[in-house]
Amino acid sequence: MADGRMRDAGIFGAASLCGVASGLFGIGGGTLLVPFLALFFAFGQHRAQGTSLIALIPPTGALAFFAYAKAGYVSWPTGLLLIPGVFAGGILGGWLAKRLQPRRMRQVFAGLMFALGVWQAVAAWWH
Amino acid sequence: MTLIVLLLGLAVGVLVGLLGIGGGVVLVPALVYLLHMDQHLAQGTSLLILLPPVGLGALREYWRQGQVDLRAGILCALGMLVGGYLGGLIAVPLASRHLKGLFGCFLILAAFLLWRKPQQQDRSTPTAGEGSARG
Image 1: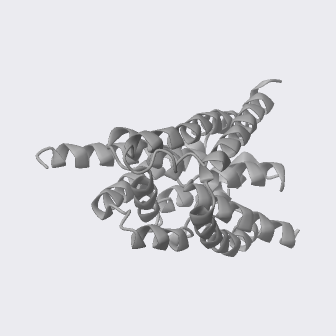
Image 2: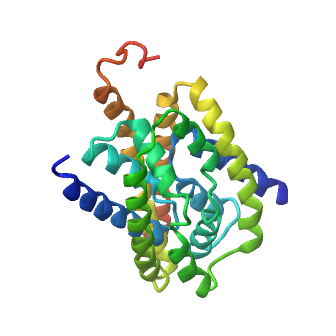
């Protein structure tokens, strides 16, 4: 590919942006990275998701985590209890994804997220 | 309480594997509303959970089918490491109230992106069975 360099730079830039969201909101960043890869870099959906998962293998949120930990914003007992569940659930979800048509689930879930987002924004800023 | 936390982890994990989305998007509001955490504390705890590679089990499935771009993945990891630090620096001094509101706006944006994805998928694979994609 002749434009490989540009593409690499673009991917790095897009990922940096996802990283800012990741640190700002305490999330993995895959929520933004997957659509970015699909929309701007012509990744197929599965390839975008797989690549996003590999980007999350090294603890990419580590530096953000330290910023929170230094300020005392980490609940260790709850966090450590959640890890095994998330891991086991991830395997279960991967298994389910092959058997279910996740399209409908995505839409139900997107609706739920939208409602939750509106609720949080209103609860935070209304009064 | 312990049982609730364990079950919450499992439920979040299923969504991670099934939808290929970050667990944090679900975890943070769950911690805020179910466990009554402060917004900063919920976000910091969510980052703690993402330190070990919780998506490794799901990645195995994608790797087997050759659906991973290693080069792009490494570039993304580097970008997110740097960006993440920046985001953390912005978030920590923010008032909890504003952080919560901003998070709500982000959830709305993420909901739109999530809704969009399946349509994008249908368009990108026009030859691979238009009919079978619509179950």
